[in-house]
Image (cartoon, rainbow, N blue to C red; front, side, top):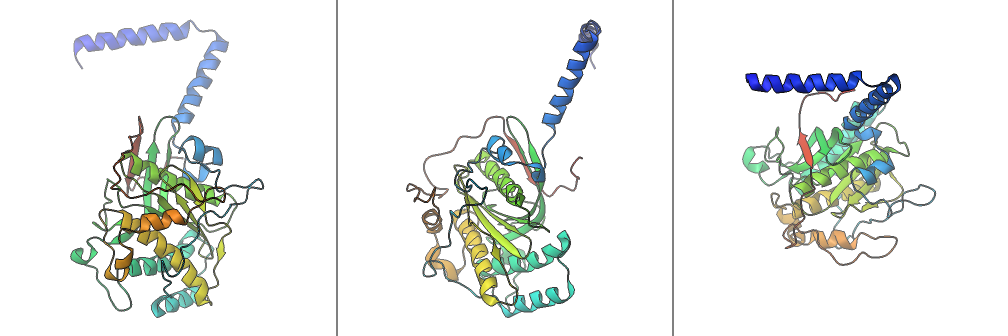
Length: 345
């Protein structure tokens, strides 16, 4: 350190020490509490600590459309008609895998639940990526322009006020790499949260994770919604967060009986619809030939499936090519990656 700089630092320290020494005991107590409160506010909140107020205050989400007076989730997003987005039954491979898991695996832990969710998400993405029974493309060339699920991905949003930080169970987006995530996040539009239990507040954590990803996309000047899935491998609930921060819910959770193909088909249809919409609205993902009729139309299809307070929202588009450009959030810093560091207590 430069000698003159050392003198300045020592002078500032002596001035500060003199000021502190002049404080009374009660003033010192107030100073200590103020510093503690500042440190507490500076510490990021984990997603499982979020409250409804945090979703609105920290992430700027609008919950009006999903909440009722008795705190139930109002259904405000529905699947499109089958003629617009066709159903696709589960493959024999998936049914065999789930039967085997059900025989020998317990869902009493995070790892157990995710074993079931892994198989179902893989099936949904295989169909969206154009891989069906017997096709096993895995090389770099075959993965280009495809979707991939990145498990346990660290997501952090830092803006004005409190920060949020945590690991998303599954983040679905570009398959450019099996390790590093595209920092632009222009194709990461689907968040899947897996829980062991099913508590009334689980949806807050799931929507908080999606809200943090939405903030990241906005900071990168990306348009479009974020799709959120909440599950405990038995019950499934689906959310859409539009680019204005409005949250839409599928309403009551779907209870899936693994012995019924129609239950599995319904859950897969939701997952495929979310993944297909995300892929079509992302400049880095290409839909396969089987979805050629949907190319460029998913933004409008999603819009028509959303409702605010029971009414149809005004015409709008989620297309990233729209001429109007979002401004970056001031003082916003968001980190997304597969860091190995653990969250602080």
